Image 1 (cartoon, rainbow, N blue to C red):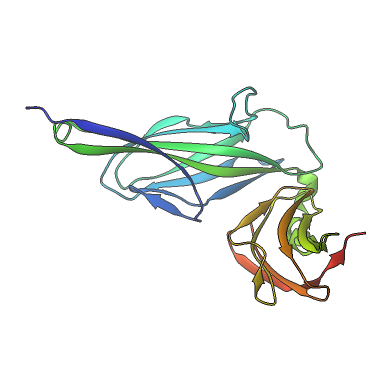
Image 2: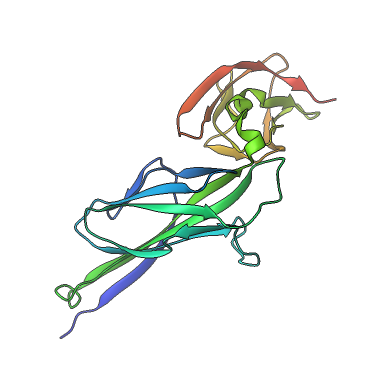
Length: 233
């Protein structure tokens, strides 16, 4: 009697600098594309004895496919052999009108195991993974000062006495810790979009100093000097 081959597709948002699942390893969890670059390479490794079909694309942030992405990935489809390393190229093919801030896109990398004739009649769990990564497009005029962005974060005590975190910069910023006097104002990583703010909903004392840390574009966590609170007018 022929046994069944069970096929499952799993979608994962990559949260680690090097994500390795079922033998597929990507060299980062987010990628920065500078405006005048020819491309942005992504290193993909197969650390297993299994062969995979790799299908990749770049989508708009809302993933509704109403607008075509200004990026392509080359090659969009290929076979990744066992224990092989390969480099994908993210290439900009159209102009991006937004020049005063960073723009966010999503990279989708789907890995599909190749089932050979020797095992296809066995009872096997066949898992396809769709890994999703952030692609941040940075206009060239912003690249010169991006290393200074983290110190510009503002901590505001609003009129209700609660803490608001403001990102007045044109960059995406990922906070890993915000605390004061043993009170944690975020309980996990918090990404702030350009020119945005986040209301924590947590009360704060008048004279508290805020300690905070961020994760930079190289996935290194940096602790910054304590900052004073600004009172909302």
